[in-house]
Length: 253
Image (cartoon, rainbow, N blue to C red; front, side, top):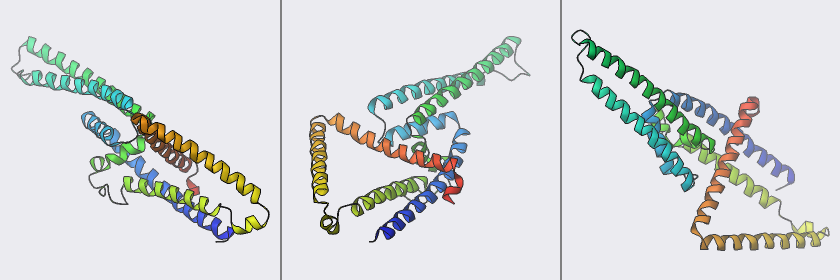
């Protein structure tokens, strides 16, 4: 493949990726708007679902999120207890002055608790998003947020589009590596020394990588951390791409 053809192919792949980024961004904005209007208890359930499914959170991060959600769950139980007490009181037509005062107090306590529950759920969501997991938060729970959404395994779902985006990224990287490799003509042109230097450097990198992996094999948690960081780096690249679409919407048209 000629350099011109290589460049054209990469341009074609990047154009497809940009168009996909535009579709994902539109879907993310719709889903996040719906998420914000959902019940706080439902949001907490979704965040627990994300924690159970994601490969990105470290054990410490999962534990911290669980603590935040436990606080929200505790407030939700308080609200249910207060509502149950209010339900035992007679209506305003037959209630005594003391009962009316108690109903007013309970109503004020329920309102206050709902405000605290909203704050607790918002803190949990903010924490998840601060880890770079906003897109995954929505993708994992897309069918709950929007019952009319295609199934998760569908290429039209947000999860499916994210999977395709990562696949294109991997393909572009592999394509560039393949066609940036030295050819016979490079050697004929006198690049033998440069080629040898490159091979030595590649061997050193490979040796360091193998050594690093051996150490990770000895320490299972390190391997898990490496995989987590790799996945988080991928999500960071995706978030940057979506940010570029937000800043330059015409680029993806």
